Length: 355
Image 1 (cartoon, rainbow, N blue to C red):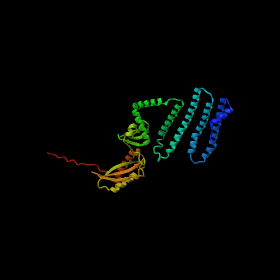
Image 2 (image 1 turned 120 degrees about the vertical axis):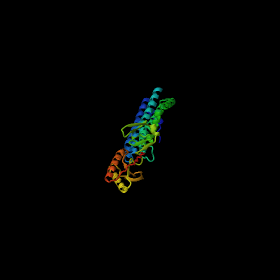
Image 3 (image 1 turned 120 degrees about the horizontal axis):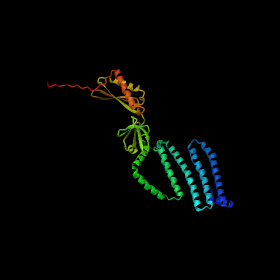
Image 4 (image 1 turned 30 degrees about the vertical axis):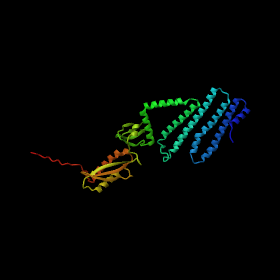
């Protein structure tokens, strides 16, 4: 069974020959249809959806419920307007206005649907690696710009505005802007790639190939800001960050950072005792991680010492300097207590006299 609007108009013409009365009946009829639809949604569909364990159907209903109701009413107003013998100008303004309202309503629904879709896709990072929590703001903004641009395009068509000239003007203007602001555009695109590729994130300690080291405090579209250990903020354009070799000290499987305590002991020392003392110093330090465990390595036979390294991990790279200072101090004190000699280079100077 199909609903024929022509037959409906014929019936209305028999009931009410006056076109204004016909328009009023059409508005009332479509209002009743919209209310019936609203009641069915509110009492039947919503009740059935609430019994399911999925939240997606509730959110979709919340997004599209009002737009569908409004579309039924707008279609009724459009049919009612078509029944009245308005002048061409008033008819065009009314019809175009109704279509504009419909475009506006559905554009809002499309934006909400896009945000919901991205939020759901970001939960499956294995299948959608580019859609993650850190990239959601960027993707939301880009898709919102796309939806708004599409809505403006349809509004131009509704109001019979020739978009060809606008597109040509936008192309020429965009070309001029691209030449005038090529550095800004390079920073912009590099910022997008940094956000998507994520070579570093907020809070990471990174080292640039030029030697700067600091904590990432801000990742913007134009630049990245680093806070050094001297509390000096460095602002680096994203175009440079995109082409630089970056060492991320907080990257890898975890944020822990390994520090090395280099120490030499004299030849003839009991190296087993040396290893025991170094391990005790590391394990008794409160800021040294238990996992991975500290370890001691006998590295080389030096010119005047047996070279060792104490390797241990701290929770964050920011603790490196403080823990290294503390470990050096504790190792030196324990070596004094254990009578372990730390040698230093010595040279004998012989003075020859020709007298």
